[in-house]
Image 1: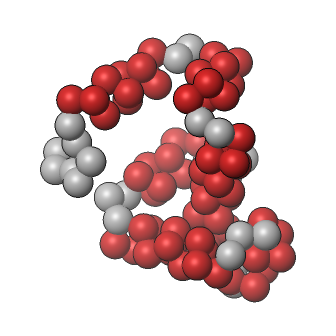
Image 2 (image 1 turned 90 degrees about the vertical axis):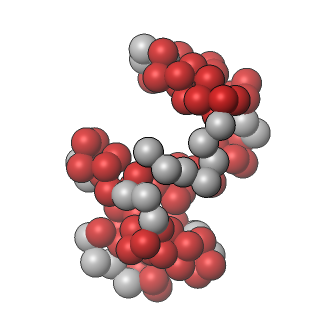
Image 3 (image 1 turned 45 degrees about the vertical axis):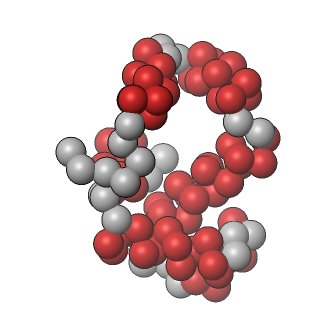
Length: 96
């Protein structure tokens, strides 16, 4: 796999994430490694991706998530031209 961020340190980070076995373990790890705002931003982006795939408008998404149009646009660009990470996750977890 070719990636702009692939290196040994990131490999170890992702292996650590893959070793987590429950939502509670994820909360414990992410609360230690990220700020609250970083976690909320990632959750917001995933919600935006889900809404974009559902063909909601920027205005609807902004009203529902309070995401900026810049964030919505960035997520939309990733859905269209990115590494398909959002698409993979949305396929696996559905639209819960």
